[in-house]
Image (cartoon, rainbow, N blue to C red; front, side, top):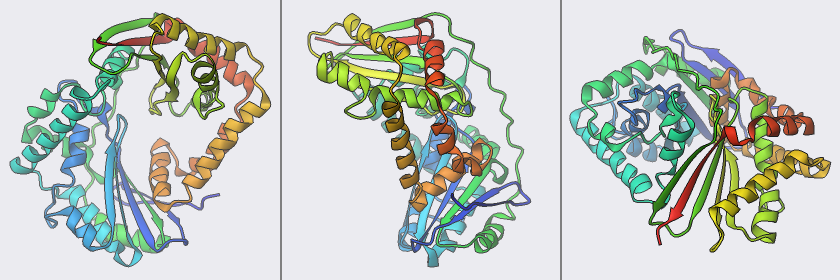
Length: 412
């Protein structure tokens, strides 16, 4: 059981804390409740652009990284469709440096034409490297566009196209900053060798005077039920053919989320999983295959990705996947097989949260979902999944009319 302390500052900043004594470090993880799904469809990629801009310096800090390094710490960030996350780790004796840095850029980020131009160039180069010049790099764009028709999950975090970033103006970027980068739209998780009282004192000192903002309320369109199979065939200069299948799945707060997660593990987690055993090792239909969930807060995707071996047609490869899914629907799933998956999840979850930095990011995420205490319930919810739950979800979700497929052919 993880001991969790919480409070909320007058400006709306949520504080989540857990002391970890087996380290001399402290982690601050600040999560902003803004992701790619909050972008205008004509100005995409902004949440990710801001991940970069936040390291461009603020009113009192010219170079964020140099200050952190001089304090003996490290930092990084990531963005997804649902939120933007920043973390910094410092020795406990230098923890106030981290509070100072994070508060200064929350309220006084130095956004100017020069810093914007530099970061726009960085993000555009990343777009080219990951999407335009990378084998299979355009799959994310194509699959999201195939699966989602009205929900803003229909574009990836990097943005719908590179022009949206290239044409971003200072006024539009600053407006995005003021709409979302505010204490009442953020969660500050603090873990490591620091007590709750000291955490609250420093949070109040450095964040307490930052005014709340009029944060834009979400009113996202609900994606309608998919009722027909969607397919796309493409040909690219890539080494091997690839098959991408996506099934619409539940949102993150649904009990079925855990069922989908278990199904993905039954199919492809480890050498003894079903698809690895049958489709890679025995039948040699695929050179590699994987099943995973996107982990989205709103209705996400269950993905199956495989590369057929030389001489195996797309039709045969897809048929083999459907056969594995049908077998899983029909089988009386062995208790040993199911418990192995549950035990592996429990082990990974427990050991992952022993690390003070992982714990900080996880506490912030669960607080975003509604309550950081959910972290103490996760294993029990996962373990309570039954074979009946698995068969029900398999029969409801894993059908052609809920499936989107990309046949990614190698240009010979």
